[in-house]
Image (tube, rainbow, N blue to C red; front, side, top):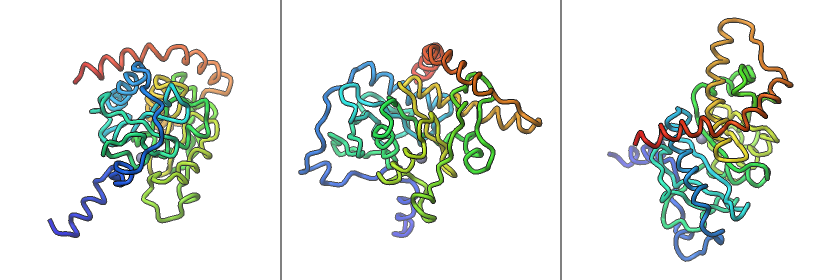
Length: 269
Ligand SMILES: [Zn+2]
């Protein structure tokens, strides 16, 4: 492979930046909050597998959890395909996106999505970022993503669309690769559970890993159903009151699909 070919390959295929020697070597990282609750780590691993099994993430995308011992730390896999993540791959970060103990492992380029949302949203316990395909058209068109059925009632207040050109200008590679871009995304999210990212994907948040996974799965399903319904003609969406009531009902039922999805995703290995 030529030098140019190697450069191009790296530029296209590297999903992660290798951590600088300073982070892995002489300079101490931020202090660790200590071991996270094993049940939280277990849920985070299962979330990675489920999101892959349910078609929300593929080789790309990631899910994090706020650390149970310190709200200023979060847990996120090292840079790898989510469908292959194990507990040993989970790393701890501060809200700036700096790992507490990198051990030479690569971190996701877009980890700033997670840290900056945790910083602005104390109610958020988990963040899912994906490029799930059915959602993409709603980020690039002027058709709003709205709940077509009760399972996606959390979309009742709508989903804002993040325009990266507003924060990063017209020449970005579309990725949230800096704290500044992560902050702009978190500001645009406001108090919504979902934000679409034009020409890129979406980010979904919830109070727990299970809630965030539930919402990420049904955001993708709703997008698929809404596109189908729009082809048929005028669409009646859930109104504000229906969405609010259905959201309360669903919030108490997240464990039912979770157990099914977890079993299927974990036993498929
Ligand atoms: Zn992305």
